[in-house]
Length: 304
Image (cartoon, rainbow, N blue to C red):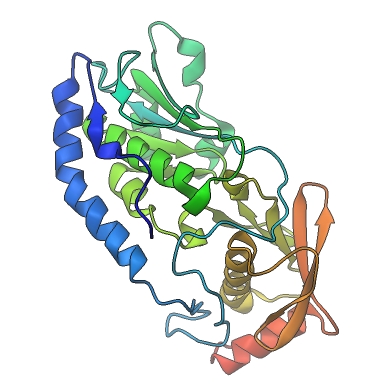
């Protein structure tokens, strides 16, 4: 993966708790370099595992690097915000914080609960899926930081996500806070946020099962609609295979390998995309999805 056009490690934190941030940056710099080096050396072929044992039946996607979508459908302008909630009342960044060489579309903001209590209402999606101890931490939050990236177009190598993740992870580590990723509906600690700075799309979206579909949450980070597969008829034992199929399709779509403009091949079967509102629905051609998933599950040794 090519290096960032600017160096996030050159944050200049001119705030009362600047030492917290500088120490966190120092500790995480080596980990970041190792993480990015690993991403650069990823194999060019994605092997999507339908079972813990793994499978290469969904192989064939070049997703071993950060690659902008050259054929994907851009739904809207990219506007990504990560929030960091922390009980540490002393600010680790503030209005005077400078990230040297950062593009104008990256901004930082900091809010104290005493000044803006209305911003500290825990979102419904967090209440519904977060463990009690994490919720307790969020309710004790005294400070809230926002890391926002809003580029005019999707940057080369998705550098906007690399930047936002690294800055948010650094603030979370320095403050002991939790990162709220609203687009993907995830709550991450500093280590989880840092480790998500990888090119594979599963690091940036959630795969969510609903009554009649399994879909992604979070592709808006790339300016793309989320991807959905219909689940009608798919038995519970095959859900892992179904999610593996969704991951493979989403990876190809986000990387520009699969286009909404033309059918594409996956595991020897032709698929097509159909836009339904703000979601792209993928469906196999000439075979029911439930049959396709069952065949894959059987080949991978899953129970029928």
